[in-house]
Image (tube, rainbow, N blue to C red; front, side, top):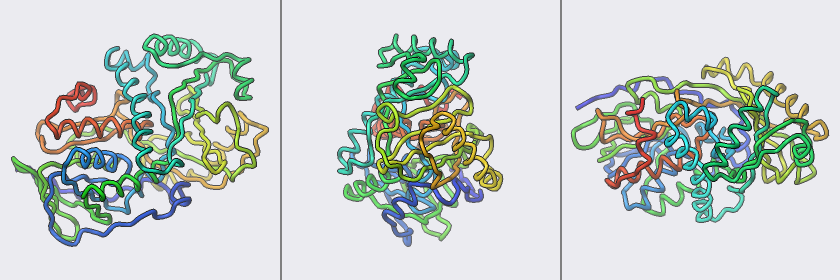
Length: 411
């Protein structure tokens, strides 16, 4: 038996006013756990990762309990800007050097597939506002970035991705910005991760799952067969299997450090009086690191994010929020001087990366009954889809040929 004492202080994962949280409010609340319970699978984390995993497990026939120390979706999910792209924070040509061509290419293709799988899932949620397909445009921030853009184009074209290399004239025509080179990807989307989370939890409940928020797991006892979770209020959850899917707080459950925490910033404009801002209202981002990124919303706002910093200290992060929001607005106006962007909401959040830019999905040898989904970087939602399928297959004792790419063993 292995016992873990979870004595970590609760992480402050975002500042107080994420746009999605203010737009939707508390979509639904769930009771706290007030009794001892037994289940086949306990999922810790009721954000976008936990809800997708739970949904897949419920559909596979498992009896599931989902718990979260906050209100559901009120961790990193509430701050998620939900640009859904197959491109990772590590460009394909660099990822190939890190993990080899086969796994790097497969990682990109899995993220592309995840976008369309999430679209299919959202169709079942009966809310067309939570998902919209969009192209994605990445421009070379500086002339020195152009050879890498061209190399990236050739690699992605070679593996069958729908991508175009745009140069100065066409960029100006389509986007009205003065950049010399960029990549236009057909496969991307924008979503509302916070609302999707609640819709998925509703579906899980319909499949017989139980959801408890304000239920903090304080201790985990691992046995040869199964686990026992103790909550801060003294209740017990007995489960055959455990899934840790509480985003960037998952590191606390792992015996060695595998994530680097960073802070990011975002702003949302006031609603604007037009619906088309640039070519198909594409997602836009750049090659510079830390990069600037932007998207539109269904209520005619523009969300701009980026200007990341290392670390997750909430005091330092939130102290920078006003300065960073002004920097983001200034950077947007430099690109689009004719768009009257006025910041309406500003927020900051925490995200985690790993050394190779890929998430960690699966179990550790010393805890074979516990499964993890963590370290997803800027692709949290798409990698959550990937993680949900891999973990479901593992629990079904079904071989998943992609699992090894994201396993603990690679570390």
